Image 1 (cartoon, rainbow, N blue to C red):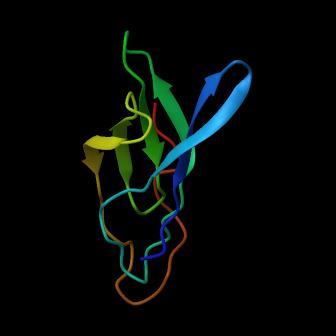
Image 2: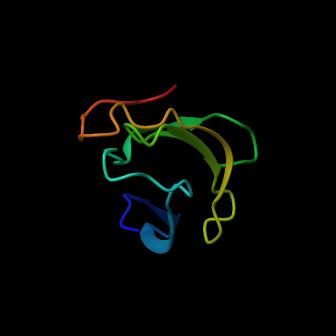
Amino acid sequence: MEWGADEIFTLANNQMSFKSYYKMPAAQTSTENCVAHNGSLIPIPGRDVMVQGWYQGGISVFDFTDASHPKEIAYFDRGPLSAERLVTRGSWSAY
């Protein structure tokens, strides 16, 4: 299970500290390209939420308010474009 991921850091006193990774939880087939691409922050007061495009992995929305324990709160997974071969397309970004 080798998926792309987002690294999550906190910032204190001008220093970044690594806290965790967010990896989309949905398994992908060998004919899907799944790479974290062009994420966008969602402005929700008091929370840290992001929407992330994963090409054919779809789109996930995750809450990383607790930077050490990010969790998926919504997703869209369209499935592979081809069952026979890798086709490199999908959700490039989401807003």
